[in-house]
Image (tube, rainbow, N blue to C red; front, side):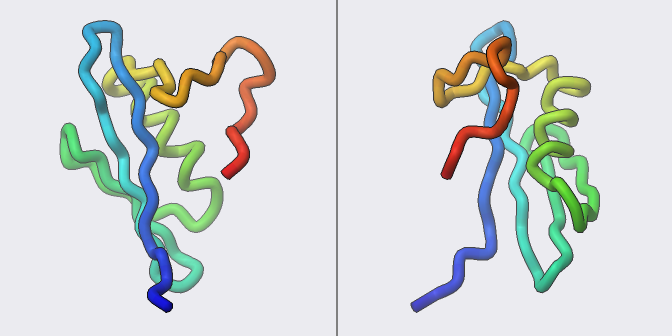
Length: 79
């Protein structure tokens, strides 16, 4: 059975454009990269949080396509 070594975080900006940051795993190290601007960073801890922060800071993309309310709880959705 193949191992899943990638996931993604996507958010929409105020103009309705979708922005995606991919999280790839190689051992304990994770690399995050933005499909929109090409930004890349290594992240051993909390890569999904860093991806969300990049989307909010650089692209003003804060609307979760899963419909989760960011104002209540603010935690990650269970997967």
